[in-house]
Image (cartoon, rainbow, N blue to C red; front, side, top):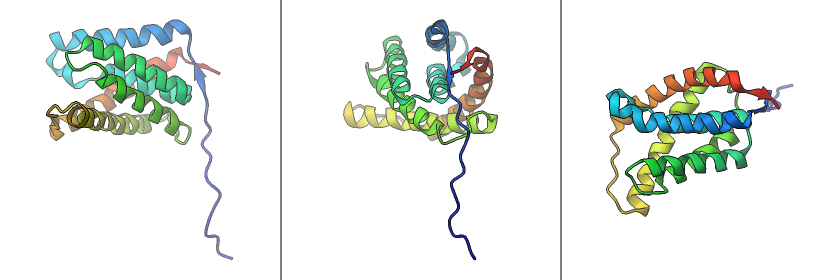
Length: 174
């Protein structure tokens, strides 16, 4: 007898919670670093720390609604600190938060290689979303710069793995 279909493999999904000060202070610290670090360190322009925070909390909390709301708040706060149009990062990070939380229930997000891949892909997705929002909805000429986007995705993937290991210390099983 030949088995054509097998039962889907179930990934053990563990949901984590965080204390309220962590949920508030970590994004604020990431936003502050994002605003000031590129002024003193040119290589920091490749980092998107608010994106990494949205991805991390979306992966760990596994609640699409809270990830969507968190992404919106972090994105709008980043918009208020940037020179770009208000709502650009807010819309992109809202989508990223939702996508992250939704896919986290299907993936083993504890392994560093998987975390790197998730951050790499989601950074590129955010770049694509911001390009579409700028060019189509706002009518502004968007810049693709594929080489620098790939380099930034690599940098964010590596920093994301290290940052996630640090933030894992603050999580508690739900």
